[in-house]
Image (cartoon, rainbow, N blue to C red; front, side, top):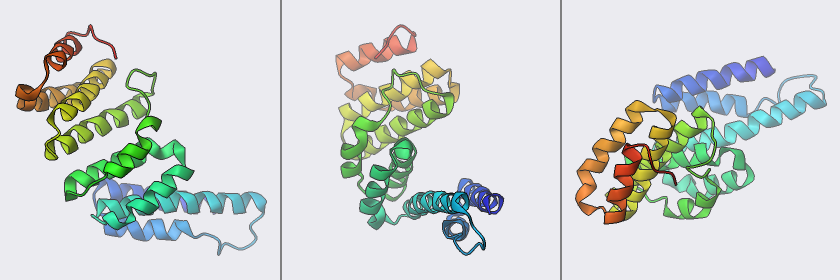
Length: 202
């Protein structure tokens, strides 16, 4: 059962990465309910429950990825019960909000304090996710004409990219900053200069 479930998860993940979301939903729905397997012992039942929880979260993310903003309240409830995926979930939500132009202000306010600090020791994978979150959050703020806030968020992304030597992310952040630099405060301009020079820490 476990191998079968993981096989479905991998197929769903690959389809999601290819942005074939409707196809991915079918695999997520399938591994969300594996209770039909016969002869499950206590360990097997726990594994079934794990797949159900994963399926619930991934199903909600797929709904967001296809522009269904009505699931946001349910998604917030899911994140409350599964704090280990808050960063992943918030990244998915902000990317969808930018793609489909809907608001995730309430979600951001609720979970912002639970994000890893930009100056914390994070793995490369988590650090890359955190970079993408702050970059997308900056784009979100710029779209809403929150220019100074957007620049502050972009500086978080720039700092993370520099810290991790994530060069493509660094170049992307510099490019977006230059598009909006006229709106930066003097302090933000100073911070930008020193991040680029590698002598700034949050």
